[in-house]
Image (cartoon, rainbow, N blue to C red; front, side):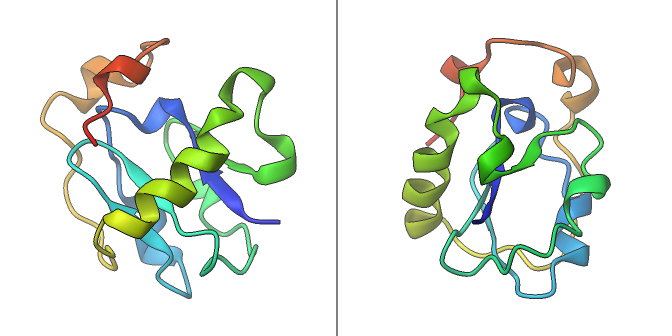
Amino acid sequence: MTYVVTEACIKCKYTDCVDVCPVDCFREGANFLSIDPDECIDCAVCVPECPVNAIYAEDDVPSDQQDFIKLNAELSRKWPSITKSKGSLADADDWKDVKDKRDQLAR
């Protein structure tokens, strides 16, 4: 099992989760983070750090977010590693409660 970043992260990209990851499994895109399933050690320390509750254990990903399991694996092969937190996106607070924002994902 691995952990998965879901839709709530899109256009927010809070990076609180990155600092606590002991194996540097996060990857960074323009407006979303992904978790490399081959690097994740299932420790769950990132979950409580996410201010928008975007990270789930693979077995607990909500049914309407299941596509993010495959998406994290795909994007983590393309995007660079992020190992230190940085500021969230400028308008993150405006987007944090928005639903249905898959079309906003910058690949």
